[in-house]
Image 1 (spheres, rainbow, N blue to C red):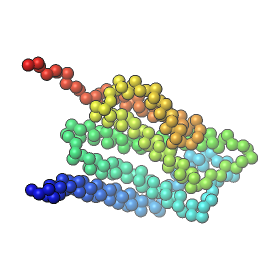
Image 2: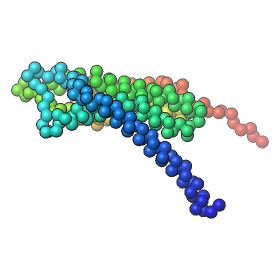
Image 3: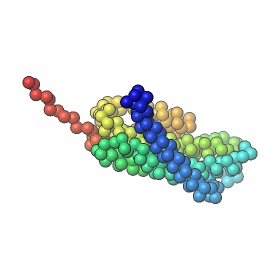
Length: 253
């Protein structure tokens, strides 16, 4: 076999992986597009639903405004696209699973499937926590501390960017237990080692909360504290996923 033929055989698996990756990406984009088309006629309803946490705290004579000519169309459009991605998350995760599953051992597959389901549930839980718990608290605070002579009229495009940022921040933050279990099950760290790093993790949670949320202590704490709590949950359940080491020493000859 010539050198060129050997190189061709080595490159073939990589090409097959790239084709498989492209196929699964296209399926994910197609699913998002189909769901988006189905939701587009409800774009204004989706916007009203997302805007509800702020609307309830606005004064009776105050409304959201659109400072850009295209904002009344683009803002519901973007929120509808975001909702399509939100709905397609299980399908997207399934495509990711289908891509990496052939490279896993049977034992790893048994562990990966529950983690995959848990990651989907936790992501949705993080977004629900943001909508039903975080938004009412921070919007109540923002609309109550301003001067009485200032009318609260938020721009809809800025509001849309604000809530999407928080949705993804809380959705990603709620994945901490899954990430912790993966590190422990892979043997990279142990629960005891993670417990020793607890002070640094607490500081990191508040730093991440400061970077991902608005510059107020309430929203920062509402992200940092759940992250810390989820980290502790990951450590607790990680004790059941710690790889068992073989303590048998080789016999001396």
